[in-house]
Every structure is written in structure tokens, then in C-alpha cells.
Image (cartoon, rainbow, N blue to C red; front, side, top):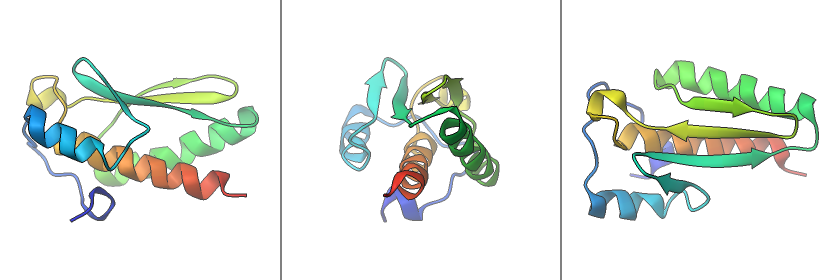
Length: 110
């Protein structure tokens, strides 16, 4: 089942290197940065950035899996790690990454 079709679950374990590499293929714009994954989303102005952050907040609430956000005028950096999995990347992180990408595509489609 694709990441976008899944839901986060409580207690998701850390992914091993092989599983992580395979799942990262579904979210190619995300980068592994040590014990977390992150992506920077670009927007035309602050209004569009905040609209994305607000849409992201709804998804985050529904999945009950919260990222670290850095919000600037024309971009937002989203970073995920799972604290309950020893500050490592879990399936929940990749599910939310895929859903964040879908939100971005929906909001920036011309």
C-alpha cells in the first residue's frame, strides 16, 4: 500500500536502513538528515506559505504526528522524526511526508 493511502499508528518503530531507502523513493524531494527527514517547500509569498502551514496543521492533527516547522516569508521547512522510536525515522514520518507533498501539489497546481 502506498504511503499516501496509509494512516499513522501509535508506537511505530524505527525503520531499518533498507526499509527507509525503499520508502524514500515515494517521497523523492525529501532528504534524510541524520535521524530525521526534511523538505523545504517554496511559495510565491507569505500568504501562500501560511495557507500551506494551515492546511498542513489539519493533516497533522488528523494523523496525530507532529513535525518541526520553520516558517519564512516564501518557504516552509518541514522535518519529521519519531521521538517514541528513539528519535529515528518511522513509517509515520514517511506517511506524513507523502501527505504533505500531496497538500503542496494541490495548493500550487497552476
